[in-house]
Length: 202
Ligand SMILES: Cc1cc2nc3c(=O)[nH]c(=O)nc-3n(C[C@H](O)[C@H](O)[C@H](O)COP(=O)(O)O)c2cc1C
Image 1 (cartoon, rainbow, N blue to C red):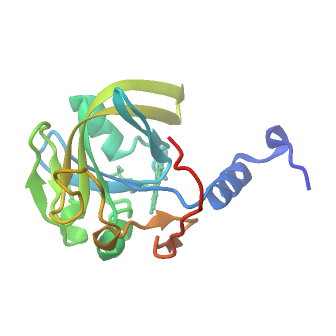
Image 2: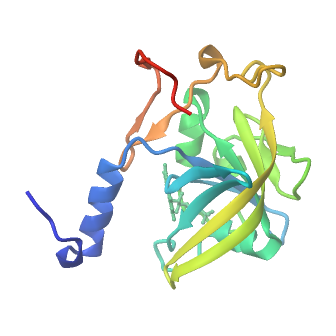
């Protein structure tokens, strides 16, 4: 089967990309808006792309009513944001926090989450998350009126105790159980890991 992307409706392109490029990591973005309401929402068109400078990137589409996502508004207003990562224990709260609610309401309340102060940015991190990256906007790319890429420079990593060895910076697999996004409301764990013989790649 061969599919020319230009001939496909946009919804089918999304369905194919989102179902085939899996599992995807999830940026669980936390911000506070100008009225002081804490916001969080998951974004899985996301990854880390460089270590010098340390960069991640998130891709924002519109809300269902065509308006700008609240996370993106808060990011563009402040030039800062927090990317929290999601593990098995926080998966359900992450999913609940994806529901579109008015800007005056907080997903921290609807999903039962606790805001914790960040050290380098004004936005809160999610206390329940295993890992949080405090980010400063490095660059934004307006792909179309409906699609904006935000590159974040990671200023600070907060890790729950027990995940990162302070001396070696190795991550303890037994204490870090991230989940990945598949499609729609489907997710996967990272429990079945395997190693290949031979030299370690760079
Ligand atoms: C696991 C998951 C991943 C998502 N990834 C994205 C994404 O990459 N880009 C996007 O625009 N919306 C994505 N969404 C939808 C947003 O989370 C959703 O529209 C949310 O209500 C936005 O909240 P906000 O307006 O408070 O930022 C995703 C939803 C889920 C459940």
